[in-house]
Length: 442
Ligand SMILES: Cc1ncc(COP(=O)(O)O)c(C=O)c1O
Image (cartoon, rainbow, N blue to C red):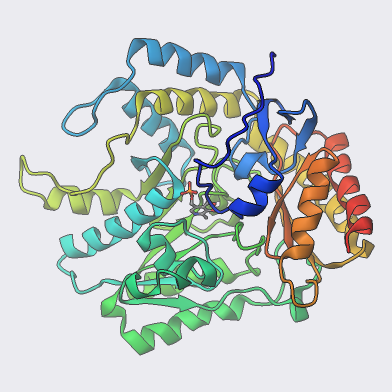
């Protein structure tokens, strides 16, 4: 691959979720990628320990996906899906539906996780209204939840810096469950922690406070990723499901990270044996080759909304110009075929024990305060530096990158979620690099 001249003006691109001035003073630029590796503009190979942003589950630049997109763009570059359609949109929806928990087989396409979340919240309100319970408008999220950056998503989300600047403009009628993270009880848990299922009972408290008749939906990430890998306590999700069902509240699982194999199953819902009413998807739906997201809705919700509309009238006033974009749909079909052909979800399940033991072997590494994991996700929490939260993990992240391994960091937590094609040697290499780096971090 020929290298392009390194860009010398970094000023125009206002970078998302980035310390812009810090980054532009010492940029980290990726130029190409194949399989498990990125290549930087200065010609270094970097092992991808986090599947880009938890999204490239089949590894980078897969020929089958690239070919499908290329062929699609020269056949049909764009087609509207408002009162029009194109075959791949329907085919992609059927393929996604096949992987969803039984009954969640109505698929609404979006272009990102944030859009999927806002779409799911709106569908929840539309559903209750269609059944004559339009007063159910309250939404319940969870502390430390991340549901993207739309106004709906930050309102139900529970990450203070994401909300603070916009606090005056958040959705009204939102409440939050407590998060389930507790190092006193659960430090160094392998898989699901034993302590904490009772925290789901807080939902009963909120129901008592607000009355079930005002509550539309509860939204949680089955495994919280962006806030630092928070694995649900044993029995917790089951309890949430029971309480929601009891009170006629919809349960939304935000599976933007957990969808498509991250836990060794198609969905976290399948992994935990708990079926929500709505399930949001995005990352990995088409291996991140083209922006795409989706909401899987139960047939009941879909039919209630659609059958409530007058014949010939639009039933749900919602959608995106690029919903089911032909190139994104083609990429999704090729990706889902690839996942099946290579049995990548089963591969993730079979690698998970090695991933777990290799991650937990860092228990005695410098600065390590907790290690947690499930499926092909792990988090290593570091003791924060006095007076400078996040600085230690940032230093570790930069040093890992310089040592040829890409990891994520959030606060003082390092997060790991490699493509599901990773092999054991690469898993060892990722965590060995982290151990070596931590030894040098102040
Ligand atoms: C659980 C969850 N929901 C929503 C989102 C938002 O997705 P996007 O960045 O594609 O808008 C993310 C992104 O990390 C996520 O982890």
